[in-house]
Length: 232
Image 1: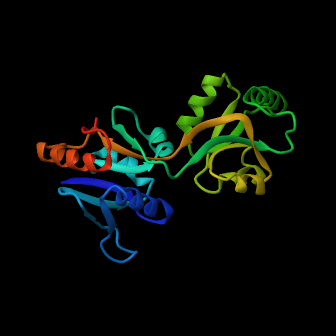
Image 2: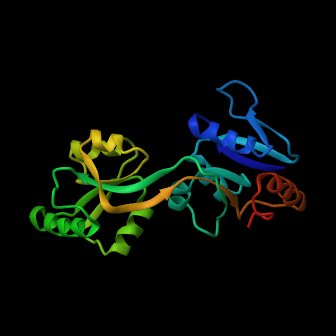
Image 3: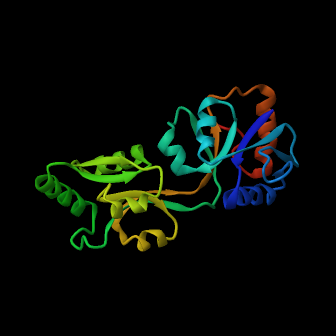
């Protein structure tokens, strides 16, 4: 039986159900909104597993689900190419991982400007400029490619946009879709501060056990969804 991890609530769940449904694969909860099991119709040998979007990368990496729908930002941050394969971009759940700085930093418009500001900040304060984020791998790789060195990443698992106002960071790297929360907290995105454009993606686990029966079931599912006939 192929286990497919799908988001368990909110807009992502409904968009996921709609995406599958538009391709002849009906998907729904099996009971009340408090239950985390689902039903799938229109294809044999496939079972949905309702999980939080953040849990799906972990379950893919552990091989406990064969397929999963979640944001590319979460998978790129947590997993490597030896653990998962991208099956298809789904065209919803769009958001950007960006770097933002306080509006009052009028001379900081680009990542190069941020690099210069970070060097000046360290000289003035004796410690590195702090950037609050949940996305340490993606942000570190991006800044390394841009040649930025005088900074430290501060872990933020709550309201990242509020860390500058609270004095726990000087800048942030966070996911945003509309930018409204950034503007409300007097932050603006660097002109070249886009780190990753995220959207919902259907992923296949490379470490899950794929039996011959599973591969046959996947082929039937793939034919309906219009995705590659093999998961990877």
